[in-house]
Amino acid sequence: MSDKVELVTVKATKEDGRVALYETHPDHPGGEAFVPADGKSYRVARTPTVEQKIRDGELVEVSADRPLGTALRDAFTRETDEQKAAREAQAVAQKQAAADAQTRVPRKG
Image (cartoon, rainbow, N blue to C red; front, side, top):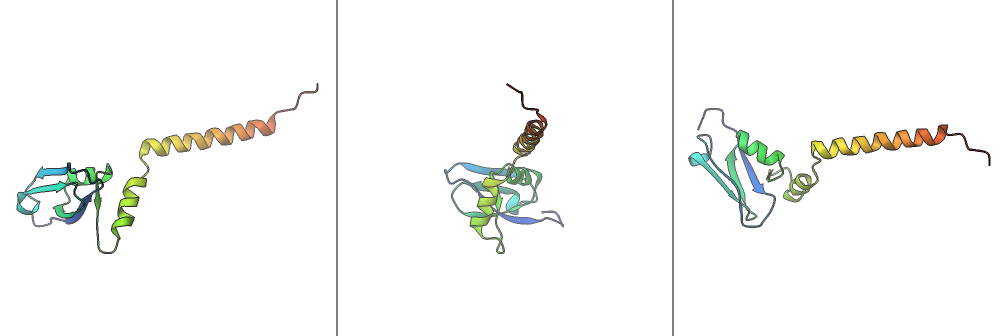
């Protein structure tokens, strides 16, 4: 392991028995990390692959000051960039429609 290795405790966000992470890297304890989706927590190095799995919602970081239920909820409710862009576009369209409705002149009939 390198001198400045950051170890984190992670858990798979699903419990389907699949392998959530397998990586060989000199920073991992024993040179490899194996995280099955079995509901248990594992210590791994904070490698780029681990970071990506956390961002993708496949792994969640677990710590003593953050209850597991909160960590899992955050992982499942994390908004992706695409979802955020779609939500913002919808808000802009709704504001424009409201503005258009206010500026329309009723037709006399």
